[in-house]
Structure formats: structure tokens, C-alpha cells
Image 1 (spheres, rainbow, N blue to C red):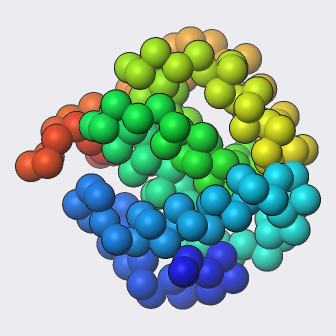
Image 2 (spheres, rainbow, N blue to C red):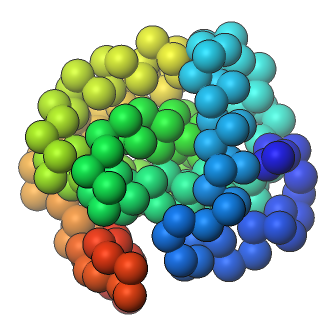
Length: 167
């Protein structure tokens, strides 16, 4: 199982660009599920212990799930993606997590998910300070919430739809 305390995260080397789906997605999903069921106390308990490398894995997971949600037409994946993103750094307003908010929002739009409703639901899971930064995202100007503003594009790989950074 994904270990948020692991400094190295060797099993997750090259996880972000790996084909979708990947068995490691399920490992992270199991961890995120413990946060969803544990609610704010579980999130608060894990937040101070999450390593920098684990935060990167959680951000990669959120980006991957935003893509997979579109590919599978499965909006439920956006709940776990958002929880992972909060613990992955949105709780501290980290740049990398803010960037991944754009694919998450784009995915929600493509699937007809009301973003404020999604964030309201996730806020009950993550508690403070994650709730604040979800609300702050919604207060940004629309042009500062686009894929392009965060250097992302929607694309396709050999298996279907996928978000990717546009370097």
C-alpha cells in the first residue's frame, strides 16, 4: 500500500506519466479511501506526516484520476482526486497542487459535475485548511483556472484521453 511517510517513494518512480490505469493507482486509491472514510480527523492526522515525495505522488494521482474520470465517464473519481490533491499540497496552497486544480476543474466540466458542489462535499472530508484553499480556487478569475494558465493541455495517448503538462 502507498505509504505517505516514505521519503523515497521508490515504487512510484515514473508514476505520473505511466499508462492509465496502472496497478499503483489502486494502491493510492486504497490510501485515499481511508481518508474519505476517516474524514477530517484522518486527514488532520496524516497531513503533518506526509513526505514531500508522497505529496508528489498524491498530486500525480489526482492528475491521473482527472484524466481517468474523463476517459471512463466516471465523476466519482473526482472525489478521491480532490482529497488526494488537498493532502498532496493544496492544504498549504502549494504550487504543484494548484496546477493540478486546472485538470480537475476541466474534468468536472466535461463530466457535468458542479465544481462548487464537489468542493462542498470534499470539504466535509478534508476539513480545515483544505476547505479554505478549495474555496480560494473558486474565487480565482476564470482565466486563472484554465488548463492553459496552469500549463496543461487535454490530449490523447494510445489508450485514450489524458491531461499532460505542456512544457
